Amino acid sequence: MKTITTDQIRDAVAELSQRANFSLGADMRAALGTAAAAETTDLARNTLARIIRNADLAAERSLPMCQDTGLVVVFADVGQDVRITGGTLREAVNEGVRRGWKAGYLRASVTGDPILRKNTGDNTPAVVHTELVPGETLRLRLLAKGGGCENMSAFRMLTPADGRDGVVAFVVETAKRAGPNACPPIVVGVGVGGSFEYSAVLAKKSLLRRVGERSPLPHVAELEEEILRQINASGIGPQGYGGKTTSLAVQVETAACHVASLPVSVNIECHAHRHQEVEL
Amino acid sequence: MTPRELSLPLDPATAAGLRAGDEVELTGTVLTGRDQACARLFRMIGAGEPLPVELAGQLIYFVGPSPAKPGAVVGSAGPTTSGRMNPFMPTLLAQGLRGFIGKGYLNPEVKEALVRNQGVYFGAIGGTGALLALCIEEARVVAFPELLSEAIHVMRFRRFPAVVLNDSVGGDLYNNALRGHVPTS
Image 1 (spheres, chains in turn blue, yellow):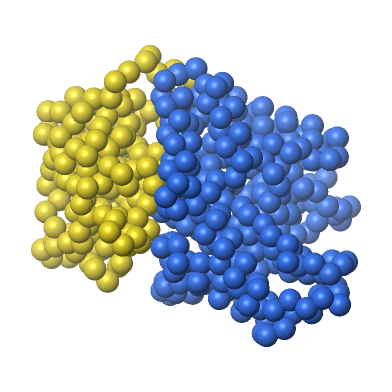
Image 2 (tube, rainbow over the protein chains, first blue to last red):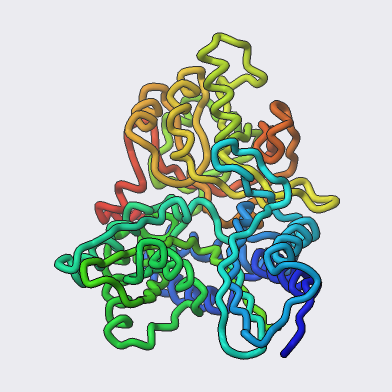
């Protein structure tokens, strides 16, 4: 049995919140660099060059790369042999967000009630997905999710007859509809199967993957590549100004589902793809 | 192509001469506003109330900056999605607003209002708020301070990079991209 204090969790979340907002990951930098080399017009190349320069500047000066510093979504994999002391996991995460936001001069972007719409002022509460796993570590994976791209996400309950082709068509349609609103080049997270709500969790979870890493399942990796090809054939391009790179990656997670169902969720992520993780 | 340098406020002839796909650098002052500020202006115009800012000839930049660090003019300050302001823009353009700066699709009503009022829609690169903040030399709140980052600010730009998305003759860069029209530059 390992003991982890809520102070450790709080401090880790505060640090991850800032690091995610200041430092674009190596995976995204590599993908943007490859995309810039492939574009053929000045406008598309300049747009990607500015996106890369923005990431450099944000990291150098500890500035948020985007003014929308996001809603925090944390996936906490809690080892069954871990004991958390000092309070609840959820309170510790929220206190970490509160401190990280204040220390990092990040923008409070959360409304406490979706109908009344009053800003909570400290970007809390975070969305926390907790899963019990074997072992004695606590793994925290954090996304700071922008609103513009989140708004372009979609769910559809397909039928088994719609099949693979139906999945491809729905994901491509969603990415095209997102267009410039989602700040392309985008990363497309897809959850196929499970149940109504679980497909959406899978779509979000797929965004935690290192960009460029294919699914280990060959038929799913092939699906990812086909969807990516079709989205990039749209011509939308960086920022929708036209070009070859509308999406940097399509990341599909799958799960078993009912014989009568084919749920599909598409979670759109912008080029300011902020994901960081730590193990305690 | 070298971007064209434009002074703000834009004179009507310059605005009318811009074409979708033109790369520009903006120098001078703009107003800021997004969801709540634009909704308030829209309601005040409908109610016949005096506005807290003069819209005629101005551009509105759809932005809600992150907090400024000590000593900085402004925090990160990139564009937000323009389409959320669709319901308000035909009315604001009819008040003489010259145009706006944002990102993302507009609805047909707003594009028609741009043509009708000889207005222009500029795109700034979404998600580059740190870089764009370097082009903002001054930012001060001039109306609705209670809206915090969403308050109306006057911002002074110096060579703020943008591209013309929709022009006053119906040109539309996003549509051109979807139809496979590659910019000539």
